[in-house]
Image (cartoon, rainbow, N blue to C red; front, side, top):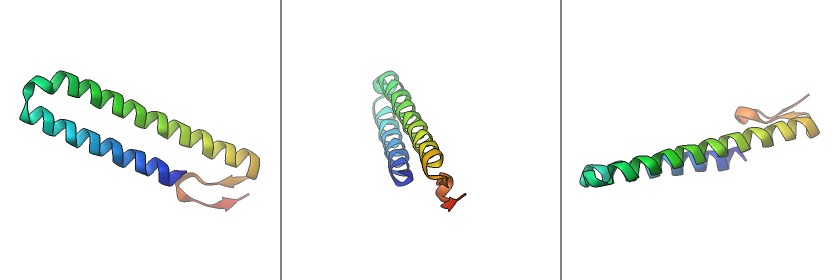
Length: 74
């Protein structure tokens, strides 16, 4: 679960780096690239929220804290 969130974070970083490269190479792409960066950041935020929901569900049903790579039971 957390590993998948880290993968999404890395993909978001990759998208942003690539779009910045496009903007530097062709200033005409700035507007559309910024829109895509916004979309990418929002999708990454959705993934963060989904991870938080999943962690809360595990806590509620298993009494395990798995947030921030902590694996402890209450």
